Length: 296
Image (tube, rainbow, N blue to C red; front, side, top):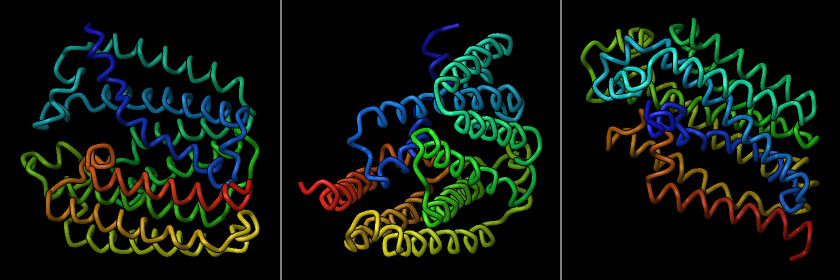
């Protein structure tokens, strides 16, 4: 078993999704509080461990269907570079690391990350084959990341932040289904992912229109909500909305015109316009939130 194959198996590139854990500390204006930031970082690492745990489990379960897929057949377990027994050992180690990290955090964090794991177990064994519930299960995973980030540092989460997270995670999940339906890997499609037989391109495009619209509207409403105005002492956060709109539009462009979207992580980590847009959004948010609070 090669070390590089173990790294490939735990998929560190997917850890970018766990950045949702930092959303509460950013919008609670506590990012400059070093002890809180270190606690939040520990929560992030715990989620990286448990999410890798889930990826290993999924690869064990999906080994036969992965071998049919033109790209997934090269995954470590499907290709035979990592045996199932070796994968089980890696799974166990990651699970113990998650438990060890969680024990040093508030008990509510432990409960939240446990629900995250249970949700993923249900997804892996059943829900991934149930139309609509599959993408809602993905959405729940993102919501639990945000909640976990909040309980780890004992800050409240705006209802609008939760709603925005629901819509944007649904958007990403539905986009993935759309890419799978319209991508180049059309042979044995149902064997690759059984639930795809219950979707079609027209249907997922309608769902994605709703999810994209919901993301933009809920974020815009959050920026002008009473809680945001009182927390940041500023009504300028609304000016960060164009970044969100552009990000959604750019993602849709890549999905429809470039046949991308099967790997959301690849888009957000490799597409330069989306990366630059995300950085500018983050800088704009930080300037607005922290300038009003600390006066710099």
